[in-house]
Length: 108
Image (cartoon, rainbow, N blue to C red; front, top):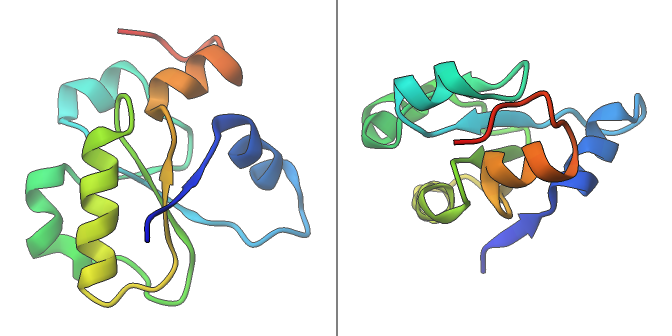
């Protein structure tokens, strides 16, 4: 079953020095990432995940991010099926992050 996290909950986790720092995996296209992203995120476009997933740690939580949460949900399920155990989808994607957490992040 796919777990999800809201943008405000993720922001709270990132702001908590006691909380485990997840890998923020942005799976959008390069032009989308250039336009808007969460600082510190790792950019691996969705189509490259199968050949680059070895770059992801298997011992840290991973939060998958896209524009609205659909592509990242697909990537999260793919990673779970590939053996990653702690993968979470950002509900509403970068758009939710922009509207609910950081309005300085561009909307498109």
